[in-house]
Length: 178
Ligand code: SF4
Image 1: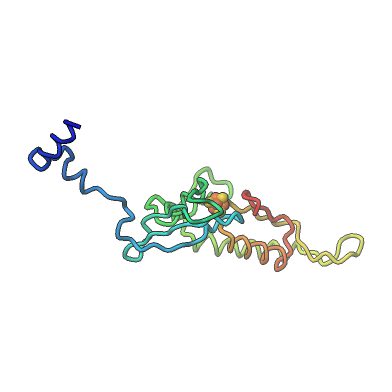
Image 2 (image 1 turned 45 degrees about the vertical axis):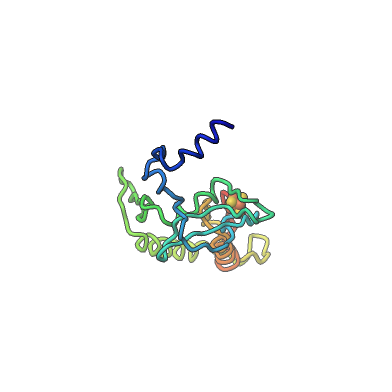
C-alpha cells in the first residue's frame, strides 16, 4: 500500500519508462476500413475481416464473431492478404521450350494464349463422341487439369464447368479436393 501511495504521489514527476516510439506504435489495422468477408478457398466458409486503406488491402484476419472459425484461420486463409498484396508475388510464367535445358520468363497473357491453342488443337484430334462399344461419351482423354491450392471457389466452379461439361475433359482434379 505504501508503495502504491508513493507512486501515486510522484506520478507525473518521474519520467515515463516507455519510450515515445514504443508508445506511438499501433496495430497496422488502426484507422483502416474493415469489411466482413468469407474466405474464398474452401467449403468450411471461415469468416474474415478484410482491412483496407486507400483502396489497398493492409490485413486479413479471422473474424472473432464467426461461429465457424471464432477468429481463427488455417495457414492458407491466414495468408490471404499476402497472396493478394505481396510485392514478392510472381507475375510471370516459367516456360521451358521443347528440348531446351533452361527456363524462360514469359508474360502470363502469352502463356494463356498458348495453353488455349494447345487445348483446342489437342481436343480437335482427340475428342470422341462415342466409345468403342458405340456408347455416347462426348469426351477427350488426351487432356487433364490439375488445380492448385490458391484457386478459389469461384475459379474451381468455372474450371469444373468449362473443362468437364464444356470440353469433355474427364481428368479434372484439384490438390485441395474442393
Ligand atoms: S481455406 Fe482455411 S481459412 Fe479458408 S475457409 Fe478453408 S479452413 Fe477456413
